[in-house]
Figure 1 (cartoon, rainbow, N blue to C red):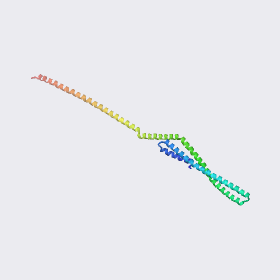
Figure 2: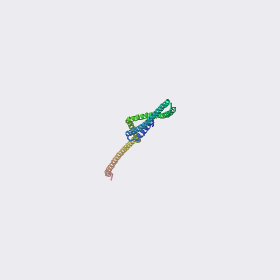
Figure 3: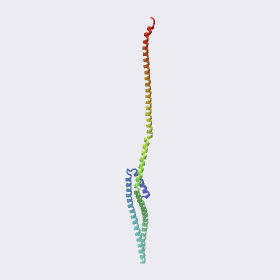
Length: 233
């Protein structure tokens, strides 16, 4: 069974990976906590098996120790009865039981230490799962905040790509071009209007000259007979 630190490191790694790919982080976190609880149930089963093995070893140690004590009592009884050979055989059996008790005792000691470590790991894992369950709301909020920040960053990047300031500058240049065109048209109109006035005055002046010429011709025509009459015969 993995140590608590290694177990939780794997859990955190799995959690981060699945949150990145999750469409609904809240549901995904609920699913992960559920799976962790299922793993905790399986771990408890394994610990129960280990505890059962530890107790079985302890029972064997106690049984062989009791058998060794029994054979020792029998050897003492044989000695009191003067049966040394029988006492010797009983001591041989006692030695066998002592050896078995020592062998199983060493195994039981190792198994008990392992069970103690498993219990500590199981307790730590259970506590971490309880913490994860209580922190679910906080984790969901953190995921939501991270997603909001990602959206804001993406929006800002998109806005930078649109270059709104350059668009405003182009619009300003276009307005200036329109204003310049309007001023040029107004100036040309003024020039045309001035030219028209000049032409009208020239026409008026020409009409006056023609009138004067006609008047002069009429006066000269009237004066001509008078001059002829005034000449000597």
